[in-house]
Length: 76
Image 1 (cartoon, rainbow, N blue to C red):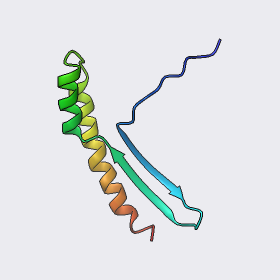
Image 2: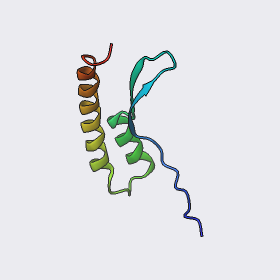
Image 3: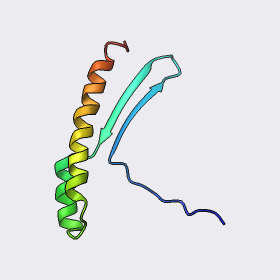
Image 4: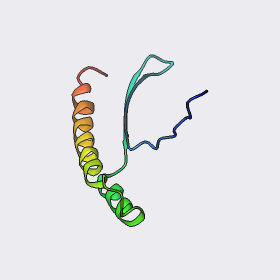
């Protein structure tokens, strides 16, 4: 019996890739914490994890920004 596939919606991602021309690219994509919190409060007010997820999004956004900034020294 196959395990059912669970679709997830990305809230945060940090990627490093290599282009065909040999350039290294870093990309960060995220849901703004305030928008996530507002949406969850309006659409799913009974969900108990909104505060914790919003806090994690803030942390990841800050840390991801620091990673991108520091990586500029490695990647041209």
